[in-house]
Amino acid sequence: MNAIDRLAQELAGPGGLKPLRVLAASGQLGYGVPEPTLAAGLARKPHVLGADMGSIDPGPAYLGGGIMGTSPAVTRADLTKVLRGARALNIPLLIGTAGTAGARPHLEATLQIVRDIARAEGMHFRLASIRADMPRDLVKAAIRAGRVQPIGAIGDLTTADVDQAAHLVGQMGIEAFQRALRADADVVIAGRACDTAVFAAIPAALGYPMGPTMHMSKIIECCSICCVPGGRDPLLGTLEGESFILDSMNSERHATPMSVAAHSLYEQSDPYVVREPEGSLLVDAARYEALDAHRTRVSGARWEPAQQLSVKIEGAVRIGERAVVLAASADPRVIANIDAILAGVEKTVRELAPHSGSEPYRLHYRVYGIDGVFDWKRAPEPLPREIFILVECIAASADEAKSVATVFKQYMLHHGFPGRLSTGGNLAFPFTPPELAAGTAYRFNAYHVMDVDALEPLFPVEIETL
Image (cartoon, rainbow, N blue to C red; front, top):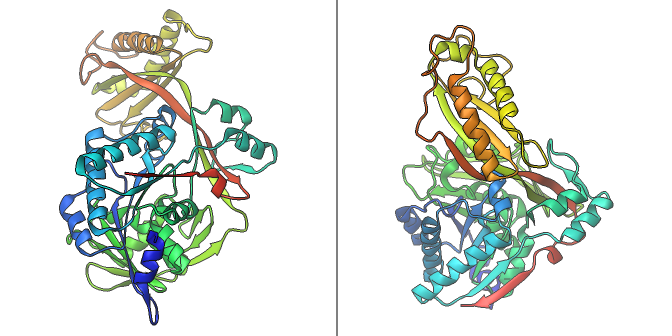
């Protein structure tokens, strides 16, 4: 009997389904799961344990490079904690977006850690893996058929983009997780997945109302961030018919109506609509009621099944090798002339360090204190008393990027400008060398939605017994 069937028997009651407890262990596994609050959550006897493991928030390098964004040691420790907890209670464990970005290398690396833990701990269970890498020919066919639309300011997806992406993944919804569980999996490790799918798959399969199910899942996937004060501690969601209760496992973090409602703004351009592959969650009529100082009950969310199934596509392409220069200044004359200084140094550098590749190297500046975070149209008044300068060079090779950064550093150090009093000492370096190789640079070249006729063929499930 698979996990869904077992839970269906356990939760069936004379008046309908009994309350379902879903414990979210981590908003991004691999950054540390607080052990005392995880233990407190497991003591509440959840029916399901879940954790998200990735995001595009850290940028395109992890997807493009096929690498994890988390420490191997901390990642292993977190996976050990949740595996021990789930197996001790004999409840399903679901993990989404394995290894930060959820492409094949991220999933394989995560699965290998899970296998190693199972061997070391003497655990025995059925492990499901779900791949999220998109068939490139299928995506190109969808482009030609006009079935791919951009999200936000990115341009239209081209067949060349598809070919050039180092990795190309699609974001799975609840369907793939349910298929893995019906194949009798105890532990499900998925590639790129919607955050909500990890927590909504089981309650949706059991017949709990989809509005509250998806709304609860959207909130608990970030754990106690929705609390006051926010934090990473596990969060317990309890589905009770048309409502759910949020309860942080840290007694010092309180899920209040205001803090929970405010979380609807997180990662959403529209705070009232959350779009998923299988439909849309509508929270404009949601109600938030304090049960006590620590817990909130939420109700009123609605679910609209999709008229057209779709999958979000993510891809990253290599754009070169990166080197950076780190510098600062407290000289008011440097600060007043920084735009002209950087432009003048760039002119000199391009004359002295011509590009060696087929394309010219690219230079970008960020002057923290003036325009490092946002491209402000005017400098602040008065000017800041000190600034931090980040110069980035992206070139065809690491050697070229480092060479350009080194030359830029030297000429920035001694560049002349109106009112200069000293030929040196106008810049401060936080350490030496101030020019550093920063690895391969990537950018997202796919951030689009693709209409599909069926989800199942895109996300194959594989089962192994450990």
